[in-house]
Image (cartoon, rainbow, N blue to C red; front, side, top):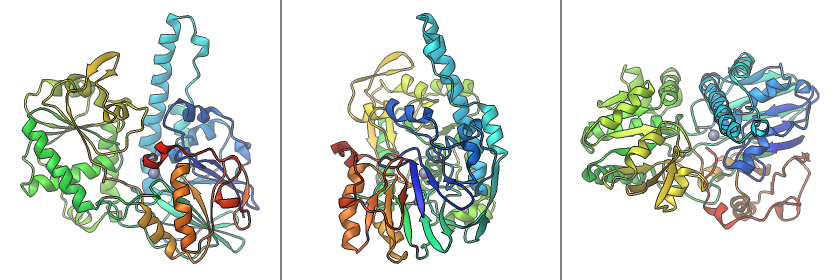
Length: 485
Ligand SMILES: [Zn+2]
């Protein structure tokens, strides 16, 4: 069983894994590298295979770091099927069209700047455009169903619920009688929205994500209590309450939580503005596929209620409406993207409010150190937003518990029913994976860090101490990193 990782090897981003099969190579996920210039430059590298030679593509879920390079694959000649679950296909449309729009807008902006200094030839083309995305969407085969085995050429593929985001699956792949489990991203078993992952069957080899393999999340009740207390403090401060949110899963989770807290009288019914068209679109899919969600959400949907609609919710459509929120006086909660504040409508809300001591900025998701959010969390006194210098005088609150990823206990629970497979660690920072190795060894499991761009026999290749040659030294930072959505 031969496999080569072309992304999410020794890092959390750019998931792409190439499995050799009798029918030709099969690619599992084709994600974008995100998180700073150095990583993002890797999106432009050539694939180490001819896209038209691939026998098939399998997709685990619709996050950009798992599907973001699919349109590039199609631009470079792939015309075969892309298998996924139905909700993944629905969310992929929203995610990829947004990505293409950002690529093209970014390109135009860079070009305008470069023209002023006569350097337009240096500006790289967008990775892809909307047309590439439409050609990609036409190849999606949303035929994978949890618990049902599909024949993909000579492979038998059984997807199971991963409990990470809507539609997310892990895959049992049977190749000539050998069994490989590909975890994709696994959910936090206390997500508060998604049902838990299905316990996996025994396998010969497991590729497992390790985003949070060296830590334990705060419990859901403690996280909700902290969120509630933060909202009270923020309402007392009297200004706007800004919550930067990723459009898929985190936005729905926060809307659902706000609705519950307001209905229980634990938070005053102040206006809530959902200022993210992408989140509003993604929320529709949660109605369509409510059977993946925890019983109270599912039951509310079955009763015709909207669990993602606090009674004071205003869904903001146009950017003119978004601008008008600035004129609204008094406390209000504004949910806007993007989650790391590196672009999107959250930026103009920050520009108008971050310098006011009455404003509260409530951070509910990971902020990479290089992002605007990361600089604010690190205590910057001023930040540059849309070309202007803005003082950070708002109260900044960070709530760490709303994770969509498995923690160490969840990962060990996942592995506990797989027998004694060979374990390959992917989708994690090197330092985090190194912390996880002895924990696995204690349980009698043989584990290796998956090398980058190097084919391994999943059942026999071994590296001394689990680290492939050339593994970069782990940074101290990596041990507290929370990358990879
Ligand atoms: Zn994910």
